[in-house]
View 1 (cartoon, rainbow, N blue to C red):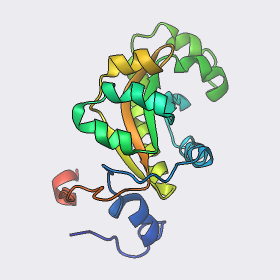
View 2 (cartoon, rainbow, N blue to C red; view 1 turned 120 degrees about the vertical axis):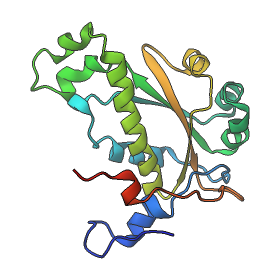
View 3 (cartoon, one colour; view 1 turned 180 degrees about the vertical axis):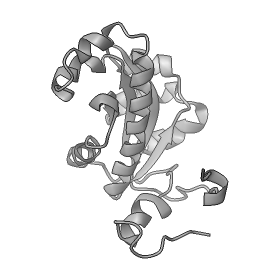
View 4 (cartoon, helix red, strand yellow; view 1 turned 45 degrees about the vertical axis):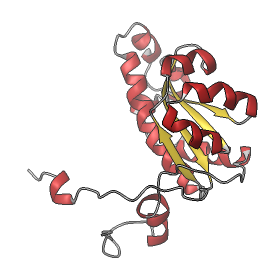
Length: 202
């Protein structure tokens, strides 16, 4: 049963709620319709505005498009994720840049010395991963906002993906397929926890 908020409680209309949340699904198969560079740029240019701690923005993306790049990626995916990745017109390797602090003089300019304070911080890798994971959630919603389906996956050899595709201190946290859903793209919808099960009022 889908729960619909009473009218006026949410600032977006029912169609947008359906597009982003209620009717949106994780796709496991895709059509051959391409995802254009312009669509990918529009998605990024939307989700980049969402918040991260200290405006850190550690998310980095590698867009896998070519047949050659896909052939390099497929053996690094878990067996159950290979067919869906092979069918996707666009696959995004989602990474956390542990050197995000180098950009803080531009992205967080009002905090003098922020870059230097984080340079030797043992907590910086965890900060990068946590905030990039938040941005991964924004990315999924951005893909949906473009009218596309997202298929996020954690089943892959992260160390091998980092060696093959990433640079510097970037750490792979997910692989996301994106495109128009193909035939039999959905698994049966699983139940969601209700408000009373998830929320404690104190």
